[in-house]
Amino acid sequence: MEKSGRPGIVITTEKFIELGRLESRALGMPDLHFELIPHPLGGLKPEVAEERGRKVADAIVAYLARPKGR
Amino acid sequence: MEALRSEKLSFETYGQMLAEFEKRGWGDGLPVAPATADVVAEFVEASGRDAGDILGDIPPTWGEATVEKVAINAVMAGCKPEYMPVILAALDGMLQENFNLYGLQATTHPASPMVLVSGPEATRLGLNSGYGVFGPGWRANATIGRAIRLILLNIGGAKPGVLDRSTQGQPAKYGYCIAENDAETPWETYRESLGFKREDSVVILTALEGPHNINDHASFSAVQVLTTIAGTIATGGNNNIYLGGDDHPYLFLGPEHARQISQDGFGRKEIQEFLFEHARTSKDRVGEGQWNYLRQRHRANPRYHELGLDDPDLKSLPIVTQPSDLSIVVVGGVGKHSSFAPSTGLLSKIVVRKLS
Image (cartoon, rainbow over all chains, first blue to last red; front, side, top):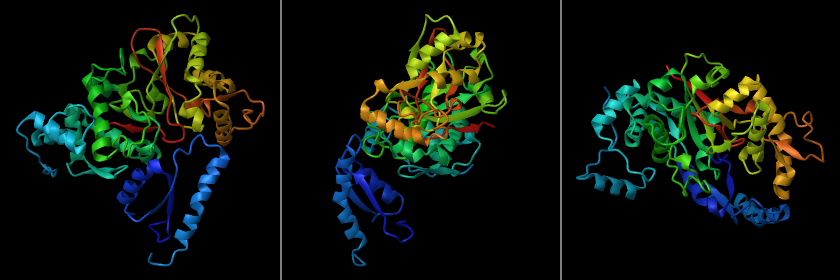
């Protein structure tokens, strides 16, 4: 998506951000946008996992709706 | 012959070379053999290919794997030049899309590529298929396995804790190369069961955990031995039960167990069917949350309803999706021991490469 010009967003836990950033650079997408959620994701009750998703939802919308060039 | 292109480094002592390698974060932590230009050239020549031939890009940093880079790592691992075709075949297999090397390199699961060489070439290269097959003592097993790991580390950049995110890793990540024990296989060989001829030599790549021993010195029949095996392999935390996928965990039958089982008329298919039926993870062996998750995952089984997995009162789940998903190979020496190595579940598929 990112490479085709549509903004892509990766949601990852904070423990995997280093892997994500290195990988995005290796694949030629150095500006790929990341939203972080607390680690771990496994072992959470569904309502807690959902809450973590909600917390980054606004940031995702704001990123996608940002004025061009920012 | 095409000239080598890699950067050359000079050191006054072996110790200085090791110190520089450590500083640069290269290697697996063990000392390496110096990859001098003349030795690397010898390895390239033994491969029958040009130094600059590109095999592909190795994740997660997508480093370009040329024959020269592979040869350098093979030299550093302590290989003999004649191992090069096996190493190149193994790497070619790992770079196939369905092997999913990126997933394997970056996963939190401990799986490592296992290189299984089957056929006359295994004997010619001196690969061990008998006593201590997973252990130390044979140069071919030790260094081919190590070369694969060095390639994944040095060219692929899968530095543990940085890009290789394996929670605990496993000893087999240092090297995981074995050969099939043809002479002690009471059925057609494993490669024949995959559609190859007995005279073929193949390299089979699969991503596995380390082998877990199955000791049964006391059973009197195939059913008794297989019941012990079923009870040992149906664990609650392996990736096969966890992801419910169709990739292949491995049952490594010791020759004595294999003979005992075959004497009662069991072939590969009968063993697979017996274990599919009896190797089931019980609800009372896993936590409630895990059980609910496992049940969800197994909905993806194409035979979900046919197998009765939709029963709300279900008490156990099969460790593989279908009987044929369990791979069976005979390895090892004398003694009543076998072993089982779970695979990654959905993550990675078996890939086979024929040696020319």
